[in-house]
Length: 539
Image 1 (cartoon, one colour):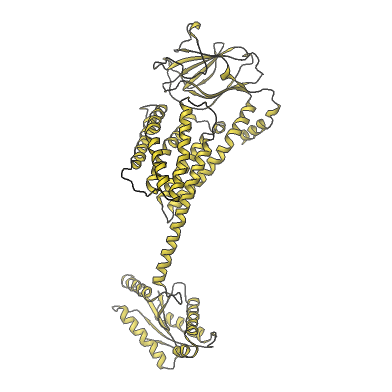
Image 2 (cartoon, rainbow, N blue to C red):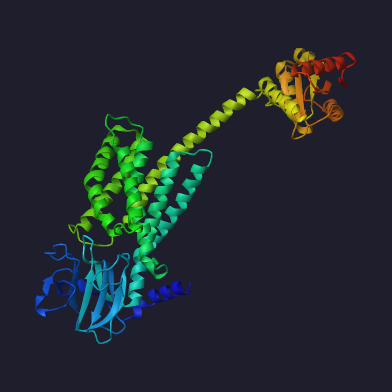
């Protein structure tokens, strides 16, 4: 927290600092192959200290530059990146190092951090010497080489990276959302792919923010995260196209592409961790395969699907086309064809992911609608259309379940059969619409005054059935009497008071559901014949 506060204070008050940035890359640079300074006459001039001619597989080089004649105090040298490890000397004294040189002038890769080198107070007009080792395809400096104050540097980093931090954080948050969506009931593979894409590219954008080095200085670990994210994107792009775009073609290599890149990712990371080869070398092979094979193939199919596909396919392919242009641009920069500069790669990736998210959200909404329709259809097959109670088919299934539970665990259950007294007179006198309203009101009473574990269903016509799990005959009789009273005292719209006759029985050992239904039906008709508006129990 103190570092963060200091960073903002330095950035805020940097206007008071007299130092102005000096672009040291514009100075006269010289180089000399080999690990020994040797003869000073062998120095050769170079426009920019990177990849001098006649390398011939050499891994060691010296660069030197004469600093400007005027350098304010407390100035620092800022270097975006160096391939691969370095030592910096001033007047035969080492003032900075990154990585370790062995006795043969070799060393191991330690990552690609930016470097901040405090310049001695008497360094104006003097030479700085850079000893560099690289077994990578590139050797030397990369990006900006500036003389500035710490305040100016922090202001510069904050200005360049604030958007990356925001986009990276949002991408990681969205990734969690899509991964949780995949783990939900929908379990759409598109959500998993997009979640992993957002996660890897969010980490890529977040970890590429140079300002994070002030708080998290683990350059090698950071580079492994960036490598995984970098190598993962073609996998996600091809896999997404393979699983989402349902457009059949005669020859489709997209599946092979993401499988090959997945294998490459695993081999590249494990191989470099185990020491079989260096991590930078995996970038070289990746660049060759991706730029000359994967990117042209995917771009061809992106354009093809864009013209042939539907609206959703056009959205997906257009988003990937944006990324293809971004990859092409970054490749031209890496090859030195286009001048290096800070370019908004994070915005390009984020726009692509937003387009893909829009496509997936549409699919999820469609899936949700299908699920809701499926549930509605299921309810229609199990629910009485008028009363919204369980229908005869559903009641039969529940009775069978209770029978099985009784036979296995001896769980008692009872049933109550309810018949509305003189219901035919209601239909004949007031019409079927009024009769339907009475049935609906009766069903409401039964649902309201039965227990949560009881199942209420419409048995047919004006008959209702109540299944009472884990209930003996005595308790079922009490419930039946309670329901009888609630019905008889209820004031129905239009028809006034109505009564009901109820039969009660319980399931017994070594009998069937048919026998139980017959017995409770007899009990209900007995209540009818004994004067109605009463309950009868049959053992």
